[in-house]
Every structure is written in structure tokens, then in C-alpha cells.
Image (cartoon, rainbow, N blue to C red; front, side, top):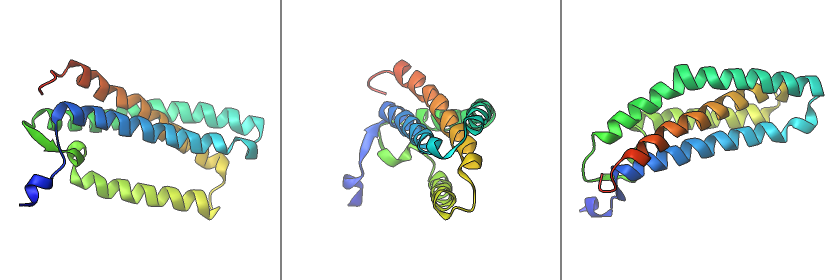
Length: 146
């Protein structure tokens, strides 16, 4: 009975949704880092941007691209209408909740200075943004009825 209320979409749209969520999260994390600029010295800003960019490329290549490829493979195995929340594995939602909680705590507690948080936020944000294009690439190649 509850099955008829499941928000189902074709797998093609899960690919787009994944890309949008990853891009949006990456932009949001970089927005947080950008807001901390007034609190930093010029040298701290330069170091944070360089370190953050390096982290971003490393995390994208060695970490998030592997996760995205695994998600893409799983999504492409679906047929028919799929629950809109299936763009991530259910275990990933637990990890996401833990990461959000840690991020809020680190940002608001003041225990970690912003000049140390900024490169982490820039790196993870850039990695998410870059990796989101793997989803867009497959989305654009996926047939409309897929």
C-alpha cells in the first residue's frame, strides 16, 4: 500500500539529482569558507586557497570520484521507476548526517580556528563540485527513457 506513495523517478533523473546535490553541497562549503575571509590575514587566505585547492583535487581524484563511480554504476543497474532518495546508498545517509553534525560543531564551537577550517571546507567543497560532473556526463549520455 505504501509503495504507491514512493516518490519514483527514472534512473536518468537520479543521475541529475546526484550531480545537483554534490554541486550544491560543494558550493555551500566554499561559501562558508568565503564568509571567513574577513577574519583572515592575506597570507592565511593565500595559504588556505592553495592548500584547499590541492586538497580538493586530491580528494576528488582519490576519494569522491570512486564513490561517484560506484553510485553511478548502482544507479545504472536500476530499471523502471526508482525511489528519488536512492541516488545515495542508505549507509551514505548516516555518514552524511555525521559529517553535517561534525561540520556544524567545528564551525560553531570556536575550538578550531577558521584559518584551519577554511582549507578543509575549500578542499571538500571543490572535490564535491568537481566530482559532480561525473554524474552530469552520464546523465547527458543516458537515454530519456532510462
